[in-house]
Length: 62
Image 1 (spheres, rainbow, N blue to C red):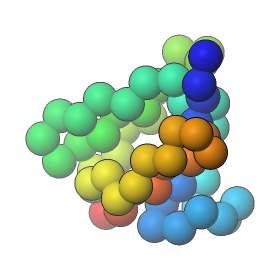
Image 2: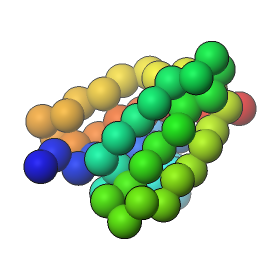
Image 3: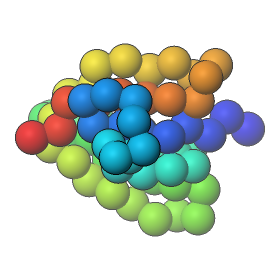
């Protein structure tokens, strides 16, 4: 199983939006992040980069 950490704007501990993300769903301008425990975080923004090998996703959240 590949889990990722989602960051806002840049890969930095200060910018973490959600850790251990197993699923990302796009709904218009909203990104719905679901972690391995079923916790859901919804952000308005867009995907910037997804490096699934490194387990990091960068989004530009409003």
